[in-house]
Image 1 (tube, rainbow, N blue to C red):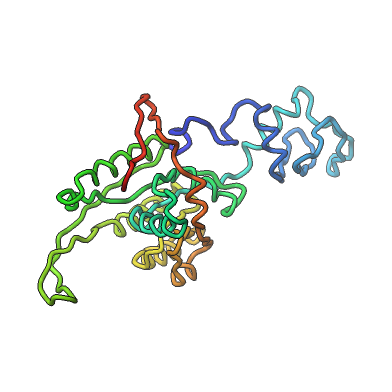
Image 2: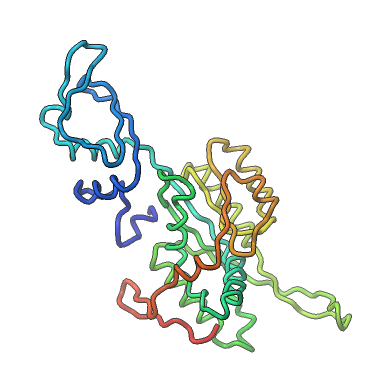
Length: 298
């Protein structure tokens, strides 16, 4: 199911009422060339330009032609025109833990301001203009893992994370969970073997999902929200196998990566203030009416 179908509103190109489309169309410059089947020459449509009836020269038929065609109102034709404009199907792949550590850094740099109650769908939509006016979100995938090994010292850690995931899913985001794996390492301080837990499979899951979406032609632009260099091989392979697709990076705050920036078609950096501007309301109300309170502590 497309991302827009899971949202409580429809994007511009999916709205059926022309009177809802026109004000938005006039605010954003939209140039569209269309060869009319009624024998009219192509026209150029720009924001703020009148769409009233006018005469157009037809060089091939050597006659004057009236616009719009008989029986077609200008609003109806605008809808047809918008339907013919190519839309860029854009997907976002979110590295949950990379983003989480970025959000923590932002909170510290913002003098303790809460940034973890993040509305990721809203944040992604805010960057569509940076990717191109024709872009629309087709899907958002969020990759993370539940830190069950921390429950002994932090009993509510997974409960808070699950509640946050429910909020994300309510906004149309697809959540894919990996796992933590225990690993023995040598402590650099006491020189003893100790147990540490590492997040496993997330970077592999993102890489596989990227290749799957490109292979099945489910997107035109893929945006990876991460600064993890482990994804570089997958991105290089994707660009080689699918040269007509765009692979972009949205680097979370303080997660800029020069190597990834060099191989990306487009890259941009998320500022810490953006996190503040895209927070869930408190409480957040799910589609079934249930309220989820913002955690007092994290």
